[in-house]
Image (cartoon, rainbow, N blue to C red; front, top):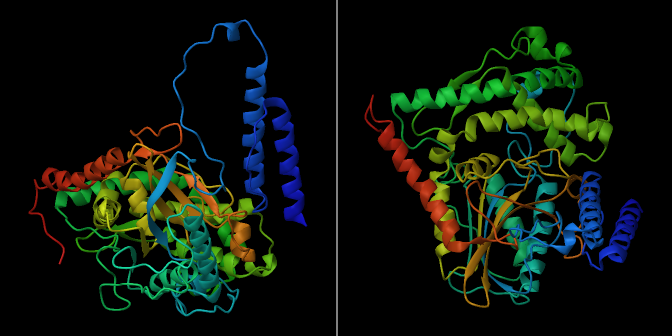
Length: 487
């Protein structure tokens, strides 16, 4: 009923705008509470601007030429720049869907609270049953979208190398790719590929340093510490709130002295060649707890149970996510760090986009992969609507869609596609009428056309520039030690 009421409210807004400017809007109803508000605000703004421009004024009598601005799609619409373009290829970099917490007994998430966690449907770090269902729904949606764009025929049975599914060798990433595949190509014999021993980290998906020198290490350390300082004030507030929610002072870890006061002056960083950046201290421990809580909120539909006896608001859940956002940004999003960590994936994505035999590629990794790739590509800052994880929500996908116009020129649209909080928690079916969220991404230094698309050659040149920066970093930071290649 709530979704219907939201839909009727949106329809009313649309009809009001249509009377003013004779426009027809295709707006999605439903979703989380945050999303319709954003859509409605955008519609009202558009309608107001259009209505003002329709009123004759002295200035209107002498119009001046204005530069064409890029069209900003309404969040939640199906990705479609219009009839002038034909979809040629799609490349996806996905984060896995809902998983159980990374560790169990003896971990921070267990020892820092006296409360009992829910019973997970997956082993520690593995995809849950709900995560699999949600990913299947997303795969089904992509099938309908690709069919509607005539990239896939109905009941598509790909041949040769047209379709590729490639995942990191962890259970949660392989399972996510399999569930998505089962939803998108339920009758095909396509399989998921992984390149290393099961449960090991594939170098392509490992957000680890692949070169290191003394001067580079110190530069990265400075960058991470500066980022930490920018989060210090918000972390102090988030730690205090987390402590209240988890009843930290009554936890076995605090009472035993294994875990001390939640402070912001104990950050310890480990930056080594061939390994991921790591940290110790309060932020590391609190991130483990906050991560587990957010996952519990996705998995458990009872608000009070999910919040350890408290029905937290979306704003309060977002405050817990402040801890996760700071953790990921410090370790994986720095200007120096991201170019190094994302280097293998940047090469992989660029290669897939250039593969003329490919129609669809699905690469499945982790939030650290999404974070480092977007940072390395200089994606402009953003906050996603409709979710509490505001940059890399669970199951999110960077979707590179290659389009061709009537003259044969190629373009690319880039979106973050993800399920809203309502869709995640209540497992709402997706369709072309009720699509997942699709948030357009913008790159610093690149200009999209009026339809929100980037020239293919321009985007590939941007990839090449960021890939080249890796070599430039090696050359710049060889003054104190030899470059050591990762094993």
